[in-house]
Picture: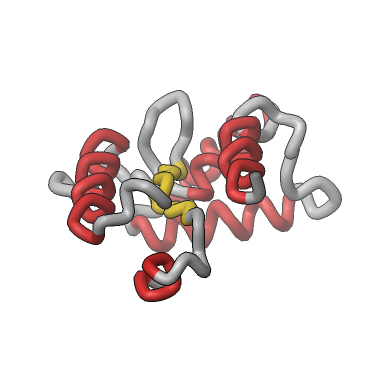
Length: 133
């Protein structure tokens, strides 16, 4: 990819990563740590002019991953239901939590998997649209 950027074949790059949680990773977990680490990598690779970072997480807590972001966009009643199930089922592993959350969401809401009208998607939409301008 770096060769394609240097040759002008790629003009813009959107780097999408999870914020995770400081409880799971004190070095890179959490929005601020993730942002600092990602910015350092972008600088080290010399991609500041062409790349934009985007950190997936729950916008309210600034922690989590794509699934946390998705959960933040569903109605409060459904979110509480899923979070209640996850809490009472006591899933401890991050990987299990992500897989279970994704499966519950797909099973519980098969006809409306994502609410793209939710305001949390505005930033995501803007970042993707900027790639094509």
